[in-house]
Image 1: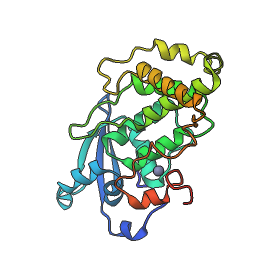
Image 2 (image 1 turned 135 degrees about the vertical axis):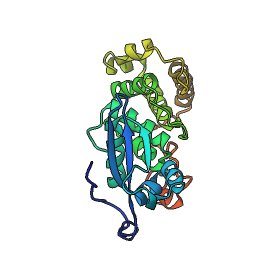
Image 3 (image 1 turned 60 degrees about the vertical axis):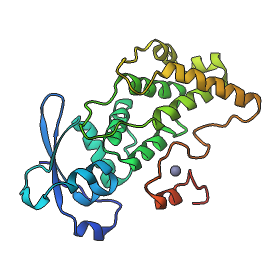
Image 4 (image 1 turned 90 degrees about the horizontal axis):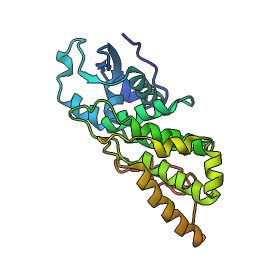
Length: 251
Ligand SMILES: [Zn+2]
């Protein structure tokens, strides 16, 4: 059984009152691991867990899992790391980002979705990194869907497509394709699964390039990585929106 990590950034009063719940995670190979997590943390950061745990008589569980869910262990461990530390690790690979993005969608964890968008908005991400990540999001849709869970939303793919369109428009095609170091060819030849509900990325990219070209001609093209926050969702948390430096530059 995994140890309960320390909570790094939180309201201590909330946790002294909070029970710990056991969540069983079953991976693709049927391997089961149990994770002990503060109920208050799960409920605060995930609408899915808030609703599911609310239905349970936690006192009656006596150490049995409150929920059994399907996920990759690596993704769930990244989710817990975010839950306890409010940030995602610097060393995340495109596979990690995709897995965590899908879990954030399944768990309706809007704060995590916002954090992942910001992680991908980092200025150090080069055209080839953006294309690798888009290919990962397009070709490895979430596995599996929890029966009661939501689908990941479109904010991250939408941001990445718009950023790639910006890079194409501002650099010009030839310089962009050079900078993509072979990833452009892989992006245009990828086979997007027909079951992919996230839509066809090629055609979405082309319409964003067209829009970027029109803005460039008017002198109004801005870098999506630095322009105001359009890829956050603070609907449920007015305090968070006030504190968000992207939404509110004076914060
Ligand atoms: Zn924001």
